[in-house]
Amino acid sequence: MSTEALLDRALEHGYEHHRGGLTFAEDHPGDFWSIETIDAHKSFGSLAVLNGLNLGVPEGMVTVILGPSGTGKSVLVKHVIGLLFPDRGDVLVHGGSVPSMRMDELLELRRRFGILFQDGALFGSMSVFDNVAFPLRQHTQLREAEIGEIVMRHLADVGLAGAERRLPSELSGGMRKRAGFARALVLDPEIVLFDEPDSGLDPVRTSLLCELIQRVHEETGGTFVAITHDIASARQIGEYLAVLWRGRIVESGPAEALFASENPFVRQFLARGTVGPLGME
Image 1: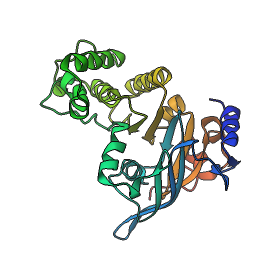
Image 2: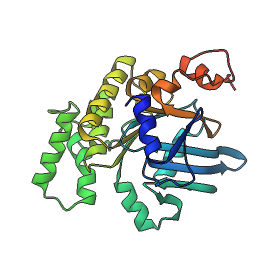
Image 3: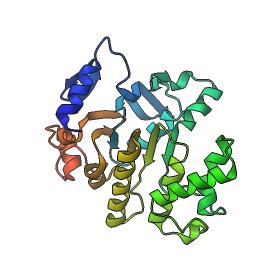
């Protein structure tokens, strides 16, 4: 989606544009963002990880959340799915406050997510087929024949047809990522989260995985959110970018606008520059 189209869509939903990104107007219907964090703070002892985080993830797009290592990206993911809760502030998924949910509501919320973890997080003693089938067996009443049909379709979608009986230890890193991606998709989630999808992959396999993410999103729709510090991946798949530093969003907006940003930190980070506010500390 172009910058102009995204801004037009945001304005239709009552949002306002400024150089730091998109913010909601005083009277907004709240259906533009899939995920929102509102002044979210989280500390572990004396270490402040989220420091007044305000973030919006647009509905139906591929959003990439970028930032240096140790800046709060993985902690943010855990807040979105209700594994952690902010010390103050709020986290909303489709308008519902995650910290206010009961446990049964949290479990239902998590079923609406598909998650691709850094290493695929496959069960080592299970075949690829059984790994991908696991969510269907846990959360549905489908017969095995139906489960088999769904699993094989998703394995074919990620290029793993014929690998269903292999164990994770018999797969390359890229194949494990693709198997994890198939498992993330089997419940037809509304939101798919990718936690460092490029971790452990060489540049070619990273590009191929990004190409797969793009193709699947075009075919299935939904909201895709990738957490990474890889600039090449952000360029390849990101429609909307948010740059996170020291527990806050420095700037967010359409990808082409972020790559043309005049913000010193954003410009340095996206250009992989050595001169700027980000150092080795």
